[in-house]
Length: 126
Image (cartoon, rainbow, N blue to C red; front, top):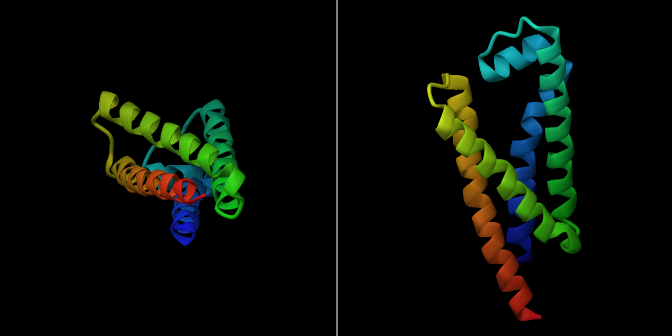
């Protein structure tokens, strides 16, 4: 179970690190999400979003090896993923690039659910 928890958090961390590439600028953000960014203010906000996802992804990977952080990581990851999935569902009409993000978040949610089960089983043993 311990290895399963580590694997889950590393995989969820990698999923959350992928948007970090957007820090490099508007062109990369446009290729990641299939959007046009004409307003420099929106570019700045999206680049900051990339930094925040980098921090979150890093936290998941650190938590994979620090048991005291694992429950917090599972909860934060679940909030992050479910909030995006709800926004995508309520907005609809998104492009193919965003559809890939939605798919990645469904995968992350499944992994997080496995992580919660592994966490519960690990805590039951002690």
